[in-house]
Length: 235
Ligand code: FPP
Image 1 (cartoon, rainbow, N blue to C red):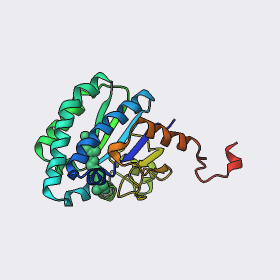
Image 2 (spheres, rainbow, N blue to C red):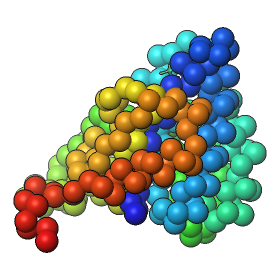
Image 3 (cartoon, protein in one colour):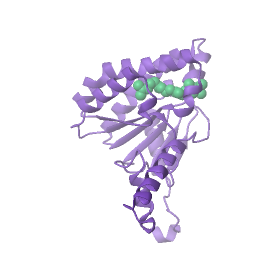
C-alpha cells in the first residue's frame, strides 16, 4: 500500500461541458468525489492524501470561476470540518496562503485547528500552490540562512532542502494520480515525485470514485520500484 497518494483532480470543466452545464457545476460535483476518495483512503489506512485543489496558475481563470472555487472551498470546509474530525482526518494546507481571500484563510485555519489532534488520514489541500513557487521560496530561505551565517553551504543536502519545502512534515508520495486523460504534472510536487509512480486515467474527476482509486492502487502494486537499481538487486 502506498503511504502517500497525491492527486491532480482534473476534468471538472469537461465533465460539466459534456452535460451541457457550466464549469462551476463540475467543481461542485468534484466535491462529491473528494468526499468519496477521502473516505476510501481512510478505509485503506492510507496515511497521507494530497489533493491539487487550486494552482498558482488557476488565478488566471475568469474571475467568476475563481470566486466560485473560493466560495466552494470555504463552504466545503465549513460543512465538512466536523465530519473530518469525527472520522479522525487531519486537515493540512500547502501553498501560498497569503494569496487566498481572508475568509478562505480563516476557514482553512479553523479546519486545521479543529482536526489537529486527528491521527488517521492526513488530508493535504494544495491551494494557490505551485512547485516552482515552493522551490524558489526554499532557495530564498536557504540563501538567507547562509547569508546570516547560520548555515554552512556544505551542509545543504537533499534532506535539508526537503525540510524547507511546504511538505517538510510529510513523506514523498509514492503514487501520483491524474484524472481526465492529460499526461502532465502541471507544476505539482516536482521535487517530491522524483520516484513516484505516475498513473493517468481518462475518468473525469467528478466521476472518480473509490473503485477507480482501487484500480490505481492495484496498478501501483504491479510496478517494480527499482530506485535506480537493477531487478536482480531487489530480490
Ligand atoms: C480541475 O478541473 C479542477 C480544479 C481546478 C479545481 C478542483 C476543485 C475541486 C474538485 C473542488 C474543491 C475541492 C476541495 C478539496 C474542497 P478543470 O476545471 O481544469 O477541468 P477541465 O480541465 O476539464 O477544464
